[in-house]
Amino acid sequence: MQEFKITKWSEFEATLYQHVLSPHKRGQKIKATSSPQPLFRGLGNSQWGLQTTLERSHPLECSSEHVSFLKYMRNALASKPIIESLTGKRWEEVPDFGQFSKLFEKHLKQDGWLNTFFNRVPVFEYLTYLRHHGFPSPSLDWTSSPYVAALFAFDAIQKDTEYVAVNALVRDHMQTASSAQHLFVIGPYMRTHPRHHLQQSQYTMCVKLAENDYSFCRHDEAFVGIGAVRAKLIRILISADQRILALKNLDLMNINPFSVYGSEESLMRTIAQRQFLTKDWN
Image (cartoon, rainbow, N blue to C red; front, side, top):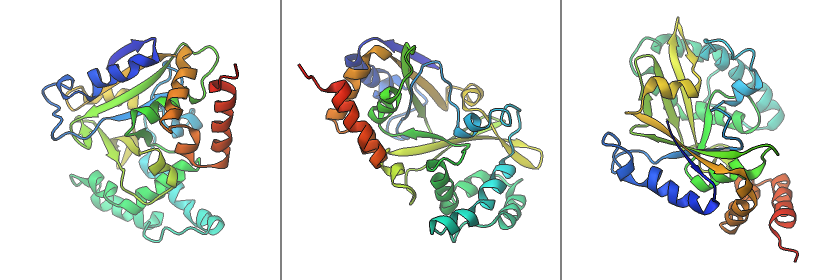
């Protein structure tokens, strides 16, 4: 992991281009001509780790080393009839858990099974819909835009925060792996909630082989296990006292809560930020 600390918002773009977006800074194993574009994730406190909503929502259940992939899929697929009944939406191509478990058992020991799963676009479209509506998810959301990531970092921070963080994931393939762990990147092309496209989202999921199952890995640990040759994490820490200037500049680029969420609540937050934080009443 590489980390760069800056105290001025004006230094963000220069740091970004020098250390993340410049192909000459990516190392010999990662070439700009063939590598996927970097992905970014903003955090409102530089002390926070790369935690999924599943880890944050159920910390006790996720504290062990083995969080079952099959158990999670059982819960997600068992919820589908209820969600369809109450929302009117349909995911006809998504199998029920009985069908899914048969597919799982058939391909568990075959090389490339995880690729097969993530190529089943309707399944992940359904999981992405759940994620955007508050259902705990083992996937971590990223954005293709470093400026959207910066908005997420500065949008709502605690009073005692010293630095926010914009994390950059640089990799040489859509999936990276060690002998024990696999980190998959999914997206951006799918039909799901509008926020997915407004936020230019992509997602990572990290798993490892368990007995007759897969289990989810923590992303922080996965980057250590996978190593820096195939994927590396770069962190840009920005002083939290730059929040108002950053939000004002991002809003001038039409990057604000309303542009990335599209809801009435986010519209009110955007208007309030303009009135209370960035408007010069003098």
